Length: 279
Image 1 (cartoon, rainbow, N blue to C red):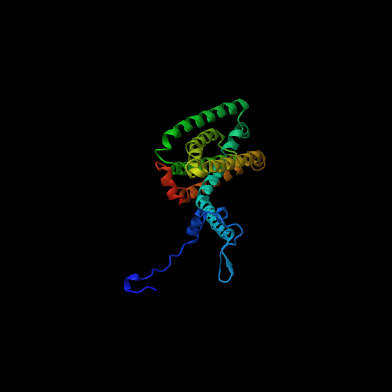
Image 2: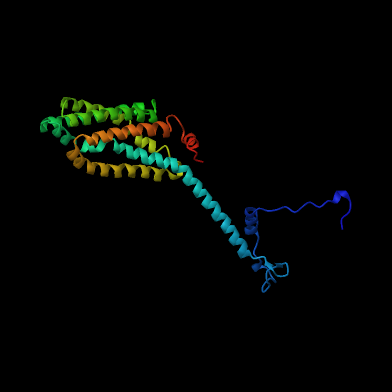
């Protein structure tokens, strides 16, 4: 018996399941002790509740599996925005019509009434413009920013594509086609052409960056195959409609980039992950 106010008994400390799992795993097994062979494990409450190490281990395994599942669910939720950015930037890159136009550039000039020699010379001019604009974009991407360049490119390419579609719909002003294509290539090269590969490397956390870049790149090339395969049939049957469609997609890209894309200029990867809600 205890007596006196100074000999109070403190209430028993309650262990959480995770703490008990850690404590239980650190205890030595009774199987190796002398004199324990043949003994049954301790029981409580008139043999109703056996203290089973197997049951404890099973409960601990359930706790750990729940923690792993919760972490995976949080990770999926955190990178969903990054997945969206990778997929959409890959899609819009090809929905601009860039590769379809470059692949069939000679046919486009021929359909506009240019001779074979003239069309080939203008194709060379378009290629030179692409190279010069890409080199120029390297000096802008860290000064102006990725998002700003995408917005500028969306407006410029949409206007040029709408003008090209008007030439084929009206069958007039073919002499403006080369200039519209040169300006279109310039706007694309300083925006989508330069930004996509930088952006894909920035919007994913390190642990999933390789898979994220693969997702964006795969989307890009799948869309390239689909659009480039459909473009000649589509253009032959509808004239300038493909260019009008590409212009509409660039207008849509402007809205998506304006409201959903984060700016990554002069931001560390850690700061960007915080902005995207990635732990």
